[in-house]
Length: 304
Image (cartoon, rainbow, N blue to C red; front, top):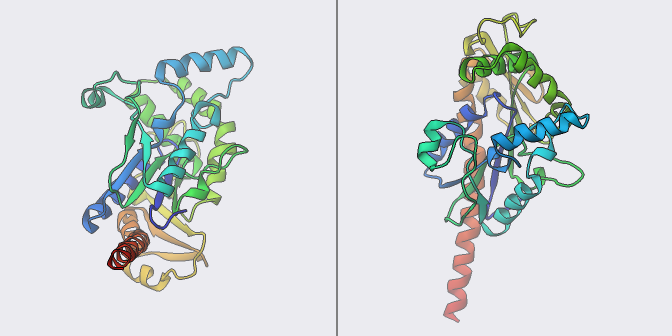
């Protein structure tokens, strides 16, 4: 971790809501005048879309039907850790973009499913913000979690996650139900080994729980709305968290454990604003004090 170059990492599986969380962070950064350097987890996939399909077929033919983007073999995790390490040490990073669709293809000048060229980021940023699958990953080869100053986990309960994936893949990508189920089954070993363990490394978790029947996610006709959900917010270190203040500011919220607060799903944005803004400002203020202190020391040295 670094005082001068802090890192915020948001981790969650596909469709978990990390993109919405990213928008909340962007609002906070804009309101507080914070210059953030953005890193996308998709940039560190090992293969582009066509290559991934070929590798999955090869792995399946060799007896491995569970090769997925959730696992380390399909990602450049050592390179991602190096980005975290280099930013925390010197404020520099290297990244690229994964082009998801035709709109992004026009923006980046690359085909959908491909990557842009790697580029260095050396801007005078206040912090680095990562959003993706492996922001708190720990394996026998990497420990990405140790480099982040603030780690946020975003995850729905498993049935809700499946419902969101089914509706997205069938509605936006034209997949059949059978194809989506095959994808879910293929990912499960890597999900349990590499995604779930990250949520014990995080500082704060936001877990969305539906309050309607999702017993059979494969027959659900629609995704439960925010008003049909609750969100459990768990703090790894609850000391210093002003729970009475949060309970007074978030209507219909309550504490379920000494380190957890439960809020209505529609209150997630305001809850994140209230909870995360002080943490972010603390990181930025620590950085400013260190930077200003070094500038003062340099001026004093020049005087003599």
